[in-house]
Length: 172
Image 1 (tube, rainbow, N blue to C red):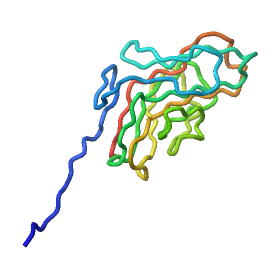
Image 2: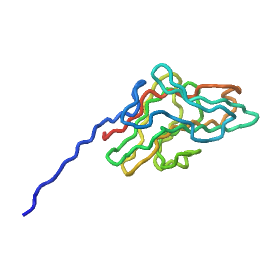
Image 3: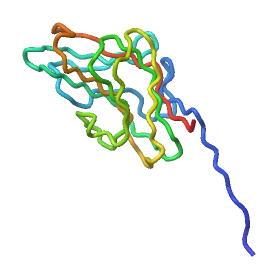
Image 4: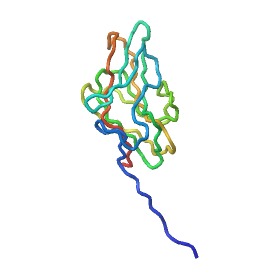
């Protein structure tokens, strides 16, 4: 006669990937620009325990910029229901998208399999955006996407778009 019974696995929740300046649970840390349409110099910097998403805009050359950023490593989301990203808007865009994709080169929110569109976020206040990923399984890149459709918001030049203070997976 074999063994009869069940096995229960343990899942760490929340599973922090980035938490106020500290990377964890990743072999390859960091966040990178993956695509979009910006004038030049998209990038990521790390200051004051935050990830800062930067770009240089030029409205006469790129009138509707989109900047897509992702973690440098895929994460297995199979045991989790939510991706949560705590962000602060420094330069308001028309829309923000947080989500997941198997692609390492997403250049639009349409390439995200699960995402949330956040609009009208207030400047200089942290907000936690929650993405339902309960139907996803396997490895995905977490993404943050900034989009601007109104050229009246900005003058051309280098700006920091968003600050990210936390990225984590959760069961609740």
